[in-house]
Image (cartoon, rainbow, N blue to C red):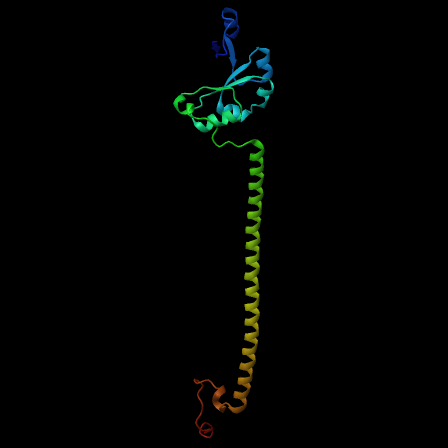
Length: 192
């Protein structure tokens, strides 16, 4: 069986070599059916990006190229791709089962579980920070009220001490005068 991959001169090839199997590219399913193409040859990056359910539903055989890594081969295997083109046949020949095999339902369960776990973890972090901020505010409030009561009691003590000092000690008569104000030694001498 010979596959005809190029898209140009397809009608001419169908006339001259009707035994050639026509292979299409990544095109809409309606276009592939109109041209009577039942096989597509697609780069694996483009196929998995665009999805392959429509092609499988239309019973179109899929060939992926160039699959050289074991994980890509495993992905194609798990996606039930019909065939692959590779440059690394020695390595891919040794693979007896897909690597990292996970059925879609298990994958969804794991995805949801990890999403929920992440939400709980983030919520716990926010709660912890909220609790810590409340504790810090309580410490500041208690220390400020302690400081306020302490300063009030200190003011009372100072005022009590000031009253006791003012009662026991009377200021000298010259205490209100400035030191630079000249004072006459005797009032009688200045009148002459």
